[in-house]
Length: 155
Image 1 (cartoon, rainbow, N blue to C red):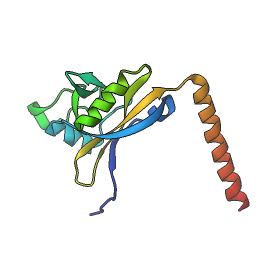
Image 2 (tube, rainbow, N blue to C red):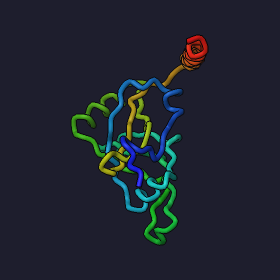
Image 3 (tube, rainbow, N blue to C red):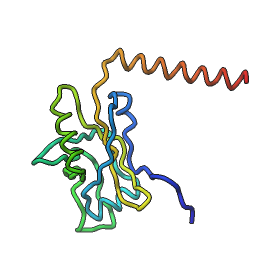
């Protein structure tokens, strides 16, 4: 049996780093049902269109698609139900205060299992990028790629 070190990603939102400027990241726990955990372990989750927001004094993960686990039968879950995030009180207050600012949002970056096998969500405190910022980031990435190729070929 192969043992992997570090977190295993169950779902990742790669587009978020392109669309948003990530200012800070926070690790949060998730309140999940058993069939949701099984579905996550199988890698069947999508967080590309999801977001997090305040509701009833807590922070919830909204629009996250974890499809039903086929072997669960009648004990299955709803695919896009809101899921409560588990955060420390000070972290929650800090995030709620930041969300009240104009242009700041909570973006889920990755759902993964930590070393103990517990599902965690990497949540980013983000500001939306303008089109010219995205273009500049693409140019910078292209230049880094070209520079690495040149260094590899010459060196």
